[in-house]
Length: 110
Ligand SMILES: [Zn+2]
Image 1 (cartoon, rainbow, N blue to C red):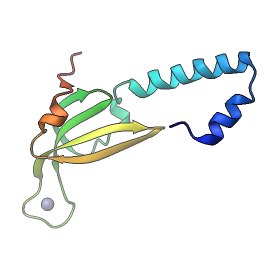
Image 2 (tube, rainbow, N blue to C red):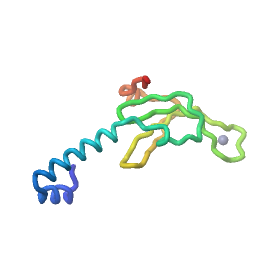
Image 3 (cartoon, protein in one colour):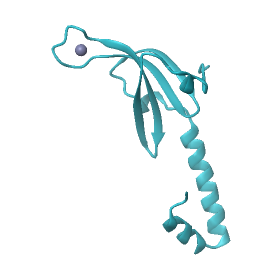
Image 4 (cartoon, helix red, strand yellow):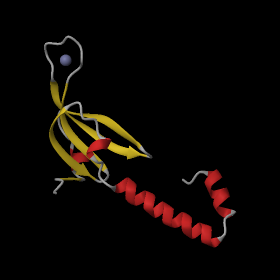
């Protein structure tokens, strides 16, 4: 759903501006689809494995809880990272990468 305010302001533009907007949107989509670069990901954890699926990067990480803890580091656990605007978002997945996630996961080859 395109926000109403955007639809309204698009309707007020002339063709050459609309074409510029279209190119800008294509540029944004290309940027958003790029795999996350190392500097967009937290680097404080030990990473055992990295996979990409769509525009999400999955990492198997060991986690230190930062307290006076005898169990540290914990895990390893899978986390998913993706981009929203300029921000990197993340979610905790768990000990295993479930089928719903792995379906789209393919080993990232470089
Ligand atoms: Zn701990």
